[in-house]
Length: 338
Image (cartoon, rainbow, N blue to C red; front, side, top):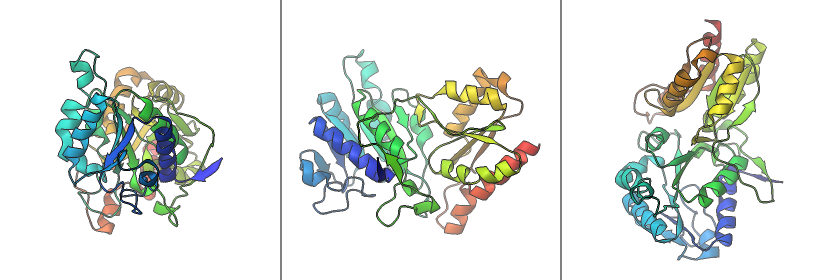
């Protein structure tokens, strides 16, 4: 075992896969600068020096170019990993992301595959409305994409390897406050280093992780919201509320079996997400549960999310709209008392 941050684990997964398969290439902004910073969050440090600029390709500041080129590479036989510095910038490439990457396999009757991985940092981090989106639901809505949401280093390495080896397009969303870096292993106030096995492993898509077992209420969360919910779990337990916390790991495919089994035990469901309330990924999970497992429920489904407002730049306003530990605690407690 080795202690790694999420960023280090992703780097190791990519390095190992690039060593094993010369078809894998990286493409993005500032990812291959000699002696540089390895992309916006240091994930690619050292990869340009090891694999050269034929495989670690710097681009102009054009997300449309990045994804357009990556889709072309994938169709032509390469296995590209495309990098967005911030997930907010993906909207500059929505035609490529919606009408091209996930569609070619269907449009060609299965004759064309698009083995593309797109990595995108999400989440509020006092950078304002254009650098703090959580846009998973946009891609969730597009048939043809698989969607992964690693929350720790162990999951990140295993899920990235699975994504890279998948012959279909995979979108990997990562919370920027969970990356960690030298001197910032507790960025966001949480311990971010996880034991990662030295031996080879992958994590299958569609298999959720139960982060904490309980019998009072099922809580589903991703990314930073998992850490915030775990931080108040013992306090809730002292109040007689024993939460069962589920990390879906992937939204597409979704592990409905684990979710349904949990709510069959608890009879209650709360979804905690950093996205806006309306039409976030939690809305879809709520709909799936309502359609397929409603008779397990003893109470309405509760969603804890951002209000439907642009993300503020001012730190105090950001902390007000993004679900906090105090808010998660109080809303769960109030929900269970009703």
